[in-house]
Image (cartoon, rainbow, N blue to C red):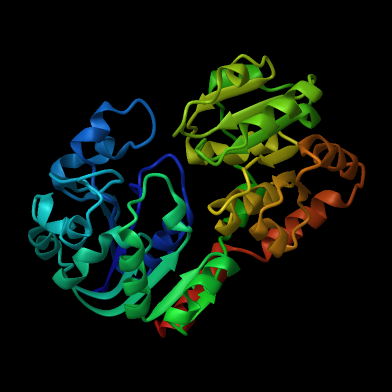
Length: 386
């Protein structure tokens, strides 16, 4: 009988965006039975026009089978934990799982997860689940500087430190996060995001949605892609400047909208915002583009992120234009970074770099050494798992 791993995550497994947690859960499921639990949905989310889509995968509180060894659960909570009185109380997060329907203890028992070899946690808002599971190892994968997110209650910071101190190992996706938490737990290391190299380097042929097909230029060198969430950290101003300066280029911005793009950008004729695209279509989209964008504002959130899309663009052989965040500087990648001098200059550098016939090989080789498989091997080694 396989041993069990519980992954405590932010988003549903079925989300249109795949993050590092998805890749690690997939790797764990090759060795263990895995239960993925996302943060719960609550009634307020039913009235949002943008952002959270957890309700779509609720399944009445029953885990959904992703494959033979991986199940995914989206709970429902009667009392949300969110910024703003009275819902930002530490009492709520400390008792979060008491407010969920159906009761989590019954679900864990029914599906054989009341005991686990490993609890793998990527969101500290799940901390009240820990007393309900008997586990041998606890790992915390810290991916964000959560205290600076506009929707994260301030009371979570002390709970995150408590989790860091309790964990058998803390995996941080950036050096900044290691510096933040190392004093609370010496078993803390930097493990940046990675890439499914073969998936992006050798895309399987498939048809793109008609809205994207119409937007793309038949000339690959004129197509520019962004894939990922359009959220509060997105640098709309720089994208608008770039689209205006490069009117022949087509800018395809795919991903869910957590904030509404400004009207001026939506009216820009060479910018297309089709929303989410299925993950399996992304390599085909990138194969039709020459440049990938990471236009983020530089702040206390983005200076701590490890952008997965950087490696995915490189694996697809794209030039990368990214804002000069601390993490993108630390990685030492071939990306073209922009700061106060603006995005247009960095984009022109990217266009010039394409003249080198060996450039695509250089970009892809840089990505090849940062695979999820290699990262997963480091996790097994640090946790002492077979």
